[in-house]
Amino acid sequence: MKKILATAGAIAALALTSAPAQAATPTQQATATARIYTPLSITFDRNLDFGVVVLNNTTFAAEAVTISGAGAVSCGGGVNMTCSGSPTSARYTLQGSANASVGVTSPGFNLVNGGNTLAFTPSFPATVTLDGTGAGAFNLGGSINVPGNTPEGVYTGTFNVTANYQ
Image (cartoon, rainbow, N blue to C red; front, side, top):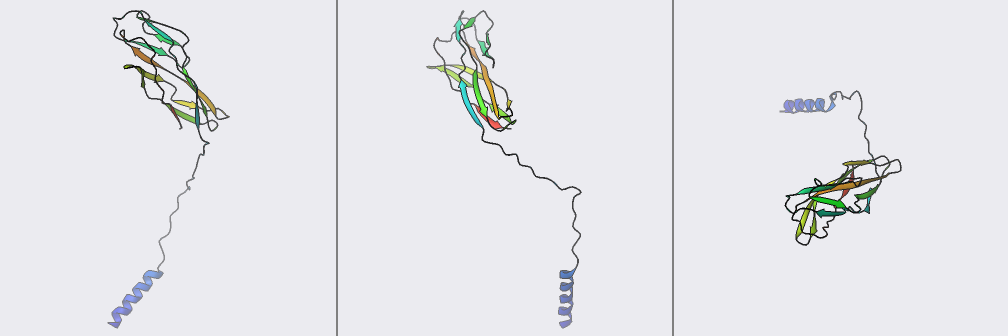
């Protein structure tokens, strides 16, 4: 029994003092990077206004009135409606880190007049690159589909616009 214990003790001592396996290292070590941005702010500058839309015929199904980011209006096919007034696109200003890329989103919503609605589909740049001072701006246009039997009145709605660093 003493012989078995002595042998077991010698094996345990050898196991504790044997050389470890050689460590492996890569040919190049990885680097870590962290890009720190200043807080991003978005400020409302002006509202979107389609101007005045006059329906010339009440028998058409629906025609689109579209306003570009630059404020140019496309008024249906030109036969069933006319557009006038002083149309403008919406405008927002961004302030953040210099030369950063900012993603912009805005979901569609409804313009409402009492119980009547017009679906609004926004149009805007997907990204805005801030300048060397961290400033940037973008315009938001969009379109509404106007059926010929749309009741007269002022239709309004509120944008939900967000901007995030990319």
